[in-house]
Image (cartoon, rainbow, N blue to C red):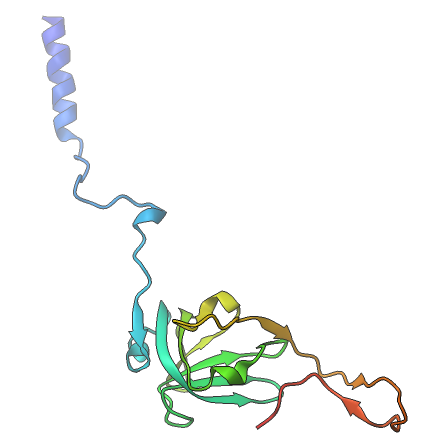
Length: 163
C-alpha cells in the first residue's frame, strides 16, 4: 500500500512539472544564425546589426584624419560608406577603387546613411581576388631623407596621397 501511495505521489508531481520543449532550438554557438550578405541599398534596414555588405568601390577619399570608401556611387549619393580612422589605413587603398568588396561589421547610422567602421583587415574581402589586404600605420611625423646634397628643409612623410 505504501508503495502504491509513493508511486501516486511521484506521478502527481511529475504531471505538474512543465515539460521541456523538444522543438525549441538548443542555445549554443553552433546554432547561431549566419551573418546575412546584403547589397548597399539594403543596409539602412539593418542598423546595429552585423552584416556583410557587398558593393563596388566608386570612390576612395583620403583625408589626413579619415579615409572613406564610398560604395556604388561617389559622395554625396553613395548608399553606403566604409570608414577608416587615423592610425591605420589599408596599404594600397586606392587599388580598391572599381573593385567589388565585401565588408563585414556592425552597420551604424551616421547622418542618416549606413556605414561600417573598418577596425580589422579580416572585415574586408575582395571576392575572386588574391589582392593582399593589410593595414599600414600612418604617422604625421615628418621623415627626414638621407642627407645627400639636398637642403635639410626637404622632408617626406609617409601619409597617403590627399585628394
